[in-house]
Amino acid sequence: MSLSTTACDQSEAETPQLLLKNQVCFSLYSASNALIRSYRPLLSALDLTYPQYLTMMVIWEKSGINVKDLGHDLHLDSGTLTPLLKRLEAKGFITRERSDEDERVRLVFLTTQGQQLKSQAESVPEAIFCKSQLQMAELQQLKASCEKLLANLQK
Amino acid sequence: MSLSTTACDQSEAETPQLLLKNQVCFSLYSASNALIRSYRPLLSALDLTYPQYLTMMVIWEKSGINVKDLGHDLHLDSGTLTPLLKRLEAKGFITRERSDEDERVRLVFLTTQGQQLKSQAESVPEAIFCKSQLQMAELQQLKASCEKLLANLQK
DNA sequence: CGCAATTTAATTGCGCGCAATTTAATTTAG
DNA sequence: CTAAATTAAATTGCGCGCAATTAAATTGCG
Image 1: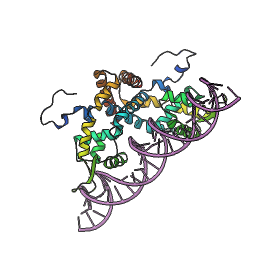
Image 2: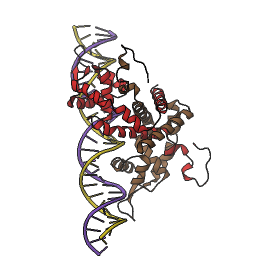
Image 3: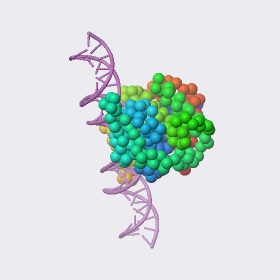
Image 4: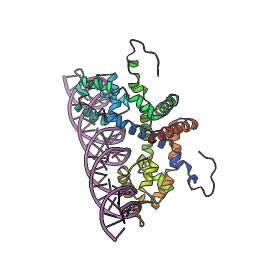
């Protein structure tokens, strides 16, 4: 960040790369936590957590998807998804059925109640956009950088 | 994202703002998870998790800090920090002592072993920078946007 | 002074994330 | 055809994050 270090400046000491304020990952982590926190009151009104909301987005788009493909889309594994999907099923938003062709595969289907949930969720994105207080262009750029970083880390 | 919608394009349907691929927060969340995942092999060699590593950064800088101030710096509360600090203490990196002036306050001090850990951690930031495969300028911009977003959400 | 209000940290409980392992079904190779 | 290898999901266990509550010390107000 800074190239110079003065003798008495404790926070710009020998190892500036080990200072919290110089960590990109900490900023990303804190912003992600804060954004998820901002979703919480909106989503708890729908009886959803943030990961459940993301999962419902995929299922709204792809009812009948299996756990593996869901995990691919969400970058999550069965250790996270299996209990999460059981909770969504317990709430009545989805059903979990074994595939007939391959008994190993678990398919996830939207219920009528899950479909109704979608219309209730439609106001969420706009509400979050307002809370962010950022211009659409800056958000798009942030999103693009995050996607590039994610892709690079997965190589 | 897209302003047009063709009749047969299922993924650009009635509610594009409810598509996973259009979610800034999902990108942020996925990138943050992936980055923390990338730290894991480096940090497990130091017997640290990522939140523990962030916490150690603050303590390396401010030995003797109390839990409240630590929580302020890290954007975490005592529900997260108390057990995390107990684990750092069990590993011998810190000590946790009551303040003499105010018995409610818990002070956290770096141990010799905790100090030694810092020198072992010095190679971590560079290793992560390489893994990210991003230019410094892009990382700086990503960091700035995250900090702006965090600040806006806290207002 | 004395008690209510405030502050600090700890505790409890729940839902992730994810590594590691297990179970069960399917595919592949001999 | 069968045994080994592979694949899909579930299970187990641990460490967060965080809301809500509790416990204990301190402060402030009448």
